[in-house]
Every structure is written in structure tokens, then in C-alpha cells.
Amino acid sequence: MSGGDWRAAWLQYLATQRQLSPRTVEAYGRDLAELATLAEHRDWTSIGHADIRRYTAKLHASGQQARSIARKLSGWRSFFGWLADQTPLAANPVEGVRAPKRAKGLPKALSVDDAVQLVATPSRKAAAAPTPSELCDTAMFELLYSSGLRVSELCGLDVQYRKAEGRTDASAGWFEPGNGEVVVTGKGGKMRRVPVGQAALDAIAAWLGVRPAPSDGGAALFLTARGTRMSPRVVQMRLKNHALATGAPLHVHPHMLRHSFASHVLQSSGDLRAVQEMLGHASITSTQVYTALDFQHLAQVYDKAHPRAKLK
Image 1 (cartoon, rainbow, N blue to C red):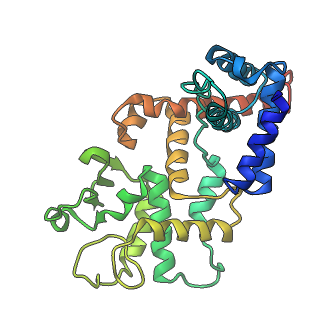
Image 2 (cartoon, rainbow, N blue to C red; image 1 turned 180 degrees about the vertical axis):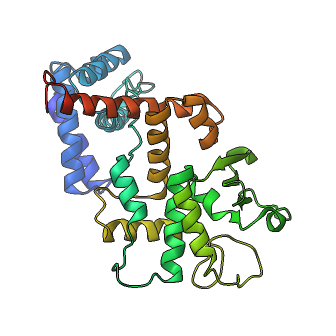
């Protein structure tokens, strides 16, 4: 068979034997046609491992995304696996060829103004008195941004150490209003102290003034309407709804407030080690991603302020 005939036979096999959808078969066909072009329409059985590596490098150099290349390699691998059953193919030339690593995107963070507006703006009408649930939300959102907590760490907080010391779960932590700190248990069971800003302290005090008795007799700092400990999922949904109600520019989730905290503290202080300690990162490598965010911020300031900047 010619190269085109083998391609048509494989696509027919995918459609009839594998019963793939027409759109999927069409996508496989495009990817195999691209391989034929890269190979300058050589006989399929003459393509070797080194050739596939070279074609992969060429796709990457042309600007194709790692995910797209990985998909094509998967299709090519499937084709040559099928071809080996039809011809005396020595080995699948795609086996062992990996796509380039995907570029690791920067964590999304809010600007300082957007973060402050998000946590400080009530979702209710200004004239209405805040409900206990709204006071709880405000305290949680202020604390997430003020101290850069993981949402699991936030939900694990108790009102004070005396109540928390008997707990055995990995997320145990407590609030120390006298010191203006929270003590949390992070990944690996490592405990750390994190300062709490005045706005968050005031919001927590307002919440504690209306906080009902826990229904389970526990000491959770943040409670649902049923009096049970707040769960990460509930915090996520409440923050999402609050962000929509207040017109936030991005889809906001709790970890975005943690990213915003780290980025904004680093912008102001330049102290990477301090940010590492407050975030509870075991390695500073995990924290260094925020230096890229910091540079991104500086680049934006430059583009807007410098008379010779190339504005985009």
C-alpha cells in the first residue's frame, strides 16, 4: 500500500472497529497528514525513532504548544502500533518520545486595589445591617488575604489554643487575638505562626460578636449556618459568589488570595525568606515563583510610566 492508503485504512479502522466519533477520526487524520508532510511523504516503515524526535523538535520550534504536540505523538504512536500488526515493522518509532514539558504558568494574583476592594466591599446594600453569615464571610476573606492561608488552614482554625490542643486532625490551628496571629498546621504537619492585619482582626472581632454556639460542641472559629465547622468547598463557593456580586475582574478562588498576599508582600518588602516562612513553603524554590509576579508588576509599571516604553 502507499502511504495514503495506509492512512485511509487506519482511519477506517478507527471509525469502524474503534467506533470513534467522526470529529475524533478527522483530528487523527490531520495529525497523521502533518507527520506525512514532516517526513516528506516517505514510506511509513522507513521512519525511525530519531526521525520522530526530530519532527517533535521541529513542531516545538515552530511555536506549537506542548499539549498539542503530546496529542499528536499519542496519535502517531497509535498509528504505528496498528501498522506493526499489518506490516513487518521492527519497532514503534514513537515509543519513548516525549513531548516538551509544558511551561509552568504563573499563579494568578489580583492587583492590590482589586484585592483590597474585594475583601473590604460588602456584597449587600450599604444601608442594610450585615447578617452573621456576611460577617463570617468578611472575616474569612480578610484573613485569607491578610495572612496568605490555605483554605484548609483557614477552616482548621479554632477560637483559641485551649480548645484546639485536644484535636488530632492534621489541619489543627487556632487564633491568638492578643498577639495578632494565627497558628496553623500546613503541609507535612508543620506548624507556623502568621501575623494578622488590623482589618482582618477587626473583621474577626465583629464575627465573634455574633458567632453562634457550635452545634457539635466544638470550637471552630468559622461556622456554617448550621453551626458546623466551615468546609473548604463552602468557602470557595461563598468567595466566588461574593466576587461576582462585587464585580471582581477575575474568577476568584481562595488560593488566588494566597497568591495575592505573597505577591503584594514581596512587592513591598522584597524579603523572599519572610514570604516563604509566612506561606509555610518547605523550599524557597516554591516561593520564587512570586519573584516572577513581582517582575511582571514592575514591567507593567514601566510600560505605563516610562516615556520611552513600548506600550502594548
